[in-house]
Structures are given as structure tokens and as C-alpha cells.
Image (cartoon, rainbow over all chains, first blue to last red; front, side):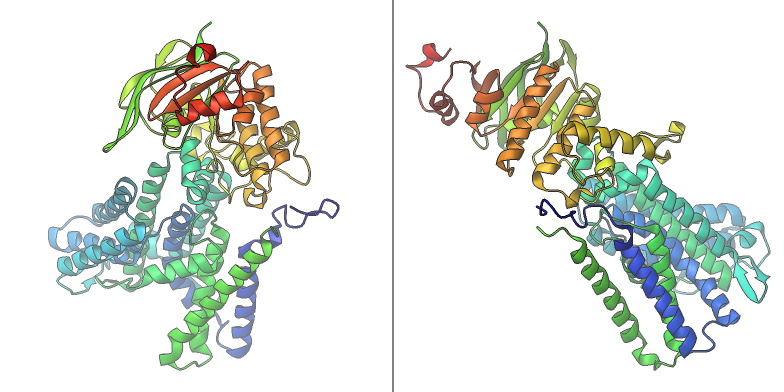
Length: 332
Length: 257
């Protein structure tokens, strides 16, 4: 134990030691660096472009953050991203359903995928890595088959749904999309749930020590199933937002989003192995990764080497977190 | 006197393995019962049944004389049964305060159900007064994460959690494993305090000396059955160890009973 006389170090949770603080510092450095190196990086047009696309991944990341905190993965989010919008557009175009019910049916399909993921993981005890990897293939294949491999023209008529999901307006020199408000609102809600509500306490406890949580009467399986459903639903919603924004519902939309989203969440400081999650960090991680992807092109990194840089920066970030975590552990 | 807990004819199989074959056990009010037995004797299975982790195949459970079914940990806690498991009681990433109230968080706006906001003020106050009661005030606050604590401190937290909910019956599953001398003493002192306050305690242990120190009665299990029980007063270490190991003590049996 600690020496008796000296005030014991690191016994209190030092807020500055939290991983999201490191992410925030990193983000500031990255934004400042790109702004200096690439004059157009901070231009209203480029910022607007980044803000248009960022929420679509960010919304998925919120669900993924809660799921990782509870100690589970979802690799099927990229495929579900495409599925929801494809189902909705097929219903509109080939059955003549109105847009509202079609979107609802699309979201319901996504929820069903999440429900199946959750039930198999909790009731059969199979690792979520394997279950959702299989589900990725099932869902992606289904979207391709349903659409016969062709992207569907999206719904062009101006409806309330279009305005709600992908409406845009100008604020000064910036062009902002409705998705930004979805992202902000959902982030506040997720942050509240994780840090302030009973449910958040349960989610962290399940990821930290599932047996202990169950022994205290926490309905661990129900919480996990709910989080799988939530994550799939958010992925479906993000896919619909994207489909409206680019007027196109593609069966291959969202390919490899699962990895990018997990990277965003983990770079933000959430533990990949569960027990600790931060929505604030996740939002920072989302901004950081998008800024890096955008900025790297702006400063003229050769296109083919682009992935190398993104991967390298993510690795650096993870090493930083690991180093901080080790320094924060009590010396025993 | 009604028994706080009484189990009769409890059976439990896991596949082909018979873990319990007709175990009987009772704990009286304010009584400290030590449950002894070698590894694989069925002690853990019996405890898991009482704390709602698993359900028995057959058998009946009564709490305060009335028959009950314990289907979940929630049921057990509602009946006033608090279990302190060996190592698995706390979530290491969570703070002391969050652990103390895990599953029973004090909330404002309770109509929000699981989404209700935790009342952190109440949580902090309750945690602070509990930490004082179990005598671990030094440098620990409700916000300290559990993974910054030593094994003994963790055990104290788990114990104070059971105290706080004023359980009718407190089950301690090998509470002194991995603990130092001073911490072990603290746990045994706690058992005494619980008894003095009228709680019943069921203590699972391998350590015969601890049994002699704190228990009123001892119950020995072997191969899924309760094979012996007797008052602790007057028993010696060797007698008890003989019972656990299943050495043939027929000759001494009358003397023990």
C-alpha cells in the first residue's frame, strides 16, 4: 500500500487524468496544426463539408460507445447503415408506400437486426465479435440482393422527413445540416444516460464486472440487448440521413464504417474491453478522426499513402491513452 | 424460534454432475453459522441458490417460516439476504459510491425508471458515513474508483454495502481469502458486530480457527449433502477438521453430538 506518511497519490480520480482530456489536447493540436499548414482547412466551406458528413458517423459512435462500455462490440453497423435506407426506398419505389411508413419499416428492420444480435450474444453466450461479424455479412448480402446491387435513387420530394433528416440552412458563411442537431441532441441524451442515470451505472458495471452487476440485481442481459437494438437503430437512422443528403440509397453505403466508428470511440478514451465509457470523449474522437482524414488531404499527403497516416495517428492516440492509464494506476 | 432461513431437500445437477443431493440447512435469528466443506462439497452451489444466482432443481426454501422462491439476485435482496462473494462483488471501474448503491441507486424523479437521474448528493453522504462506520476514512472518498483499493479495502466496501441495507441474513463467501492479518481481523470483528445487532450470518470458510472464533454453530457438507452439524462451543480444531475431511469418526460421534 501507499506509504503511511505521504499523501497517497492517485487515490482520488483526478479529472485531468481522464483519457478524454488527452483526446481534447490532441484535438486542439491537430486542429491548430492543420489550420497553420493548410490555409483552406479552416475555411467556412471546408468546415461546412466536414460538419455535413461527421454526424452520420457520430450518431453511430454514440451507440457504439454505450455498447463498448457494457463490454460488447457491434461490427454490423456499417451494413445496417445501408440496410435501413435501402429497405425504406424499396418500399417507396416498388410498393408505393408513403415515405413515413417506409422509413419506419426501415428502422424497424434495423431494430430487428439489433435484437437478433443481442439475443444471440446474451442467450447463447457467443462473443459479440463473432456474432456481429456474421451479421455484417448477412445484412450486407441482404441489401445487395434486395436492390440487385444497384443504388436506389433517393426520395427527392420535399417532405417533412427530408427536412428533419437532411434539411440544410446557411448560418453566416457556414452551411449546416439538420443531422448536426440530431448528433448534438443524441450526444447530450447519451451523455446524460451514461454519467447521470441509473441505467448508465448499470451499463458501466456490466462492462466492468458482469457477475457483480448481476449479483446486485442488474438486468444485464436486458440492458445489453437494449444497447444492441439502440446501436442498430442509430446506424439505420444515420444511413437514412445520409441517403437523403446525397439523394442516393446504396447497398454498399457504410462499408468499413464499423472500424472507423470503433476507432473514434476508442480514440476518445472509452475502454475497448468495457467498464469505462465517455460520450464527451466519443464526440471528440469523432471530430478528431474526421479532421485528420480531411486535413491530411488538405496538406497534400499523397492519396495512396492516406490510410497509412490515418492508421498511424490512431495508433499514436491509443498509445497515449495506454501510457496515461499505466501512469494513473496505483503503484502496487 | 423461527429460522431466518431454512432449506430442505435441495437438489441441483449440472449435466451429469450432481452438485447437491438433498441438502438441508437452517440459520436461526441472530445466529452465526459456519458452512464448512472441502472443495466440491457443494457449498458454493448452495450459496448461489440462496442468493438467487441459480435455481434449485428440487427442494424448498423458507424465509422467516414462509416458503419463498428465489429466482434472481433481486428476489434474494428483497427478502433481506445479502451475499458477499469472494472477489466478484464490486465493479472495479466504478467509484465506491456507485458500487455501494449498484442496482439500488437513490434517484430523483423515480418515475423515469432506469433513466432516472441518480441523486449524487445522497449517494455521497451515505457512502461517506458508511466508510466511517467500517473504519476506512483515510484518503478514501465516495468518488475513489474501486480499482485503486487494496483487497482488504474492497472487502470492507462489500461488507459495508451489506450492512447498509440492514440485511436479515448476510452471507460471506470465503471473506478472508487474499486478506492480510489486520484485514482478516476486521472481517471477523464485523461478523461479531452483525450478530450483536441481531443479523444472522452464514459464513463459508476453510479456516477452522475463524469458525471457533466467531461461529455459534457449524455445518459440514460433503459430496452435496450436509453430513454433520454441531454447536461450536466445546469443539476442537481436530474434531472439525476430521468432519470436513470425512475421516471416520463414528466412535467419537456421540461425544461430538
